[in-house]
Image 1 (cartoon, chains in turn cyan, brown):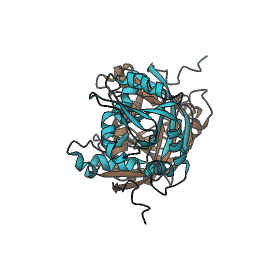
Image 2 (spheres, helix red, strand yellow; image 1 turned 90 degrees about the vertical axis):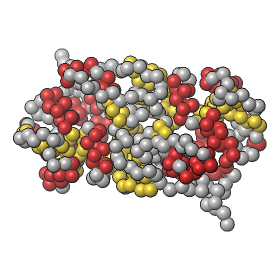
Image 3 (cartoon, helix red, strand yellow; image 1 turned 135 degrees about the vertical axis):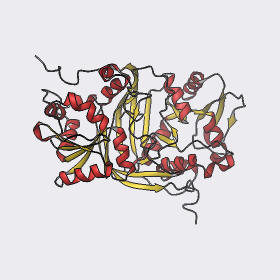
Image 4 (cartoon, chains in turn red, brown; image 1 turned 90 degrees about the horizontal axis):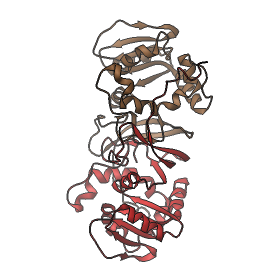
Length: 222
Length: 222
């Protein structure tokens, strides 16, 4: 996400064919530029070249750790054509949607199974398919927030890109059903730092009430 | 700020006396807990104890680098009583406000000068008073964004706290006057990582147009 929390520009609501010229795409391209430059991503896409650096290692590690994916319907629709016959996942993908559809089997180990009975079911099916490996939340933002809201996210890896977009599609948006004076608490467990992106991995501890403190005045009083 | 970009909870609009019980305070206390625990901050407040750790070093370094401060009116009003006779700044503070007021001289080197002719003037006066040291933006968020919007911020040090608040006062909010497909670009120059907070220092490069790329397809074509 950008420094101000966006993973894409302002949402495109026009024709799909015009997406590439949209503000959404411009923001998305900026935030994912480090991915496109990375050898590990390019290899999965069948593209030559790219940089072999720590960010590429982070991508490779994430792909390797994932035994299955859950994905939102909008992301699955948007990716269907560009990902082509051999999508980069190489594992079963469970798409949360309201529209029933036959499982789509692609080359290289990727399949798309359309789950119509909710996020918990999709995660459960992915867990069963993952063979003991991680279930990765592929995206988009709305699906990630549903997973967080349902208390199903164990780990969050944020990739913070040094740009401020001002507006756009927000990754951690307000639809998490947090109560007044309630937060979701996490613990950072790893930070990898490059000029292009800062990777921070968090363990998700769960919801907790926000408490006041004495602002230091009384802590050491006798 | 929190992981979702807030430096305080939902803004308190009632009586000042009720602030401590507000959602704004609850969020602010969470986001600044690491500060309250740090020895360098406690020493500036005249409190005993605290932790001598890298976050405390970051605070000490920031205080020492600042030869003068600019501050928003709401922060100055809110701090006037709790900061007491010897505020923690120990340097001239220039408060951007619409209400003229005599300069307030406190003990320990802190003074509050009320600037009514805008942010650029406040920064210029602070620069002159800083004796070659940094001019620090004390806050709050609205003032920080005015400084960014005016192109006057050279460096940004973000302190990212591992909590999601869901709602509140947003540090990098939408009032930066960014055009469609325009971003403010930065370069991270230092990351310091603790379980309680991640400190990321950025150089602000300025505004730049967002450009599309070919998503890797053509880069290495012969």
